[in-house]
Amino acid sequence: MEKKTGELLVAGYMVLLILAVWGWVFNIVALCHCDFAPPYKAEVIRSIGVVVSPVGVVAGYLTIEDGPDKEEP
Image (cartoon, rainbow, N blue to C red; front, side, top):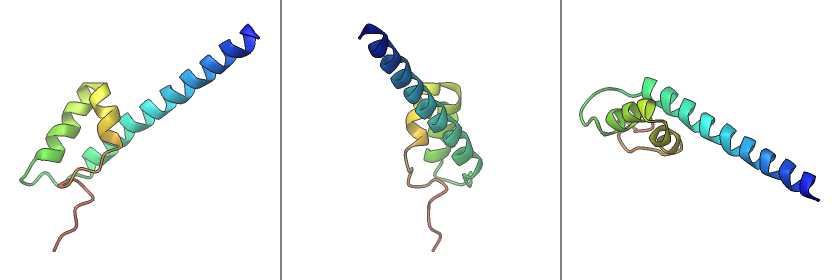
């Protein structure tokens, strides 16, 4: 029973690690698609997320209002 519990913990850790890396990479991709025009909210948050990876993991899953998903009138 303990071997199965250990395997589940390792599998859960691997899933969390993959999700974290995916969020950080998506943050970098979203930063590359930013327009770098005022306001710079998305650019600042995503740039900080590249250096401080926990911020990047969270920012990678967020849609920031003036980021690449903003619709032009």
